[in-house]
Length: 167
Image 1 (cartoon, helix red, strand yellow):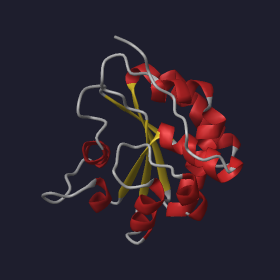
Image 2 (cartoon, rainbow, N blue to C red; image 1 turned 30 degrees about the vertical axis):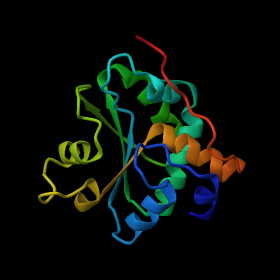
Image 3 (cartoon, rainbow, N blue to C red; image 1 turned 180 degrees about the horizontal axis):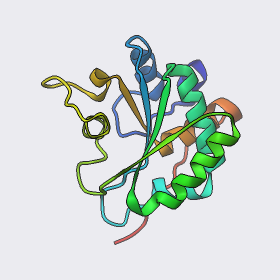
Image 4 (cartoon, helix red, strand yellow; image 1 turned 90 degrees about the vertical axis):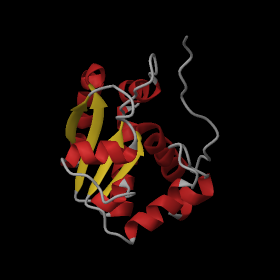
């Protein structure tokens, strides 16, 4: 957590840094870690490109996140068009000695939102006003997992990210 905090990883679109989210999640013993690669905005491809081009690094970030959080179940949430890239990540996770479930989702808004994704994955809703963590799920974007890996393994601060230029 200290290395993640020092690197300033905070890419998920959440207001708090990833280290703070992980520290809060650890206190609640989450059961499922979801690597979120679902992109619902037209033409977005940043998460897909990371899956396709850096599967070993994303897998390493996923392993670090799993170790920090202690989640026994790890799932990759991906839209149907990225299924081939998902297989590459699953192979990288297996090579590292881990296991990964792949769950295909519709690429329609707001499916990529953490609470919606967790509810769809588990087939149950959180309590009123609840979050994915209330369902025992921590959702982390693929881009955050890549930045997490770079922070912990390389000591690299989070100063860049893959973006999509389109439109």
